[in-house]
Length: 302
Length: 305
Image (cartoon, rainbow over all chains, first blue to last red; front, side, top):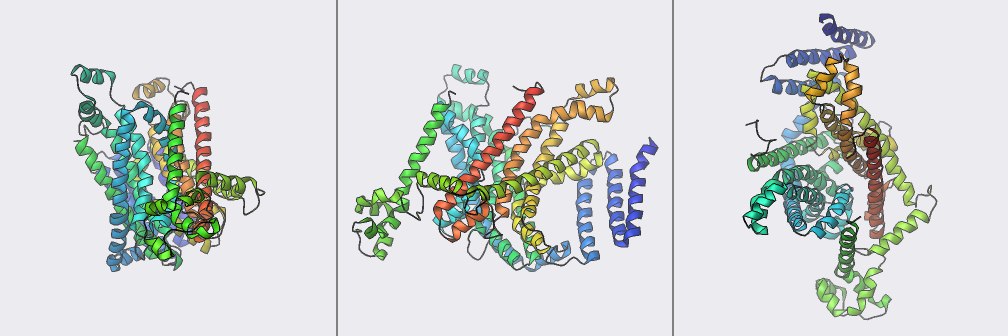
């Protein structure tokens, strides 16, 4: 057993040596990588509660350090790959610009489109559930549309609604509508015959059944749709700005900075987009936990 | 097939709304060309017409209505115009001609396919590693999940430009984006799939004293197939979007994305819609192929519902 355990370390050390023979920088990078990996393997073998958070964080930090070291040691030019420290410096020196872009793209463009698209998707989903004919017709069409590259409609919406945030909201609306619709329809059908029979014995009206049984039962599905839509919303708003925008916005900044080869700015915007996307998703997930606390997937996590 | 009538009804309603929407959308353009069509525009002067609402303009120029469905550069082309353009640019030129939509669709599809293949294989490999190595699982998995909430597509233009600056152009940069986009869905789905055998099944293999490789090939891999196909479909759709967006910075190059952008530059709305429909057809074809592969595979494994 101990020999088995030692093997990967011997393998790693051998690679480091070989790398060092070829180029000391390669050796250093490999040593860093295997060192961090070895530390992580040791930590992961332990069963403390903290390891669940420490190990991934350590891995992320190791990747960042590796990125920094590679860029510094090989003198990678800024126009190919800026180091994390360069990107951080850019973020701290241009917070105003980044905030303005974030405000234009996320708060003015993505959020209204997301809210309207999700509301419309849920509303049409409820309608489709009420009328079986509509459901049978709309569900296959919706499923088909959800798989299409809807971002492609961006140039059309920019042509119709102008360069402002309205066209971005329209793109986001179209992108989030179908996933939310499909999930809502699936969720509203997630009640068992027994539950529906119970409502029938109570002589519950269609509205009461919808409100007290079907909608609550649909919530896990609806939130699944909302979570998918939350990542689509930011993508839609950013890509729509590639087709035309005022001189502010994350998509605008990315496309113009790429043109100027100011890659540190591009990475700064990407960092902002990543944080915004994760927080948005996290917020929806929090809402899910709050609304569907009764669902098995939420229980046992307290 | 009992769904056929409802589906056709819904599609018919959508097409009806589309035709109806053409009237207010295109009326300004049509009335501005009234002389060509042989009638007098109602409010004199472009400025006055610009300030008139679309529906009011329709009411004032009822004789313009037949022309809104046949404009050369309409704001909203009618469905039959799009289909005609689609047919003309698909069958009207040789597939190697730059004016042929098949040429552009193939440029996008080939990049998508190469990227999708790389991304899927890498994703499966990483998933196998994650399932068998605790350290890998704990370090990589949270990031793989978190990365799905990040709008990765935003880096597409940068990848294109950076790879072009080191001399890589054409199919490969687009394939890199496609691979990147299909990679994480496959990792997440495949890890779920490889972990789907329950304790009893794993215990059974243990009583057979099956090795890790045997457990993998005889239990984990077959059990993961439904999950693999589900994530393949997500990954394929994402790859196609990635390839299309990756074609945007290349300007007048080849591919459906370049076609979209060129249409935007020259106001060729019918061309944009035709490219969009072509993208939809390609996406539908890819998903249909994956569906067929899924059905055949699951049936051969006796897992079909």
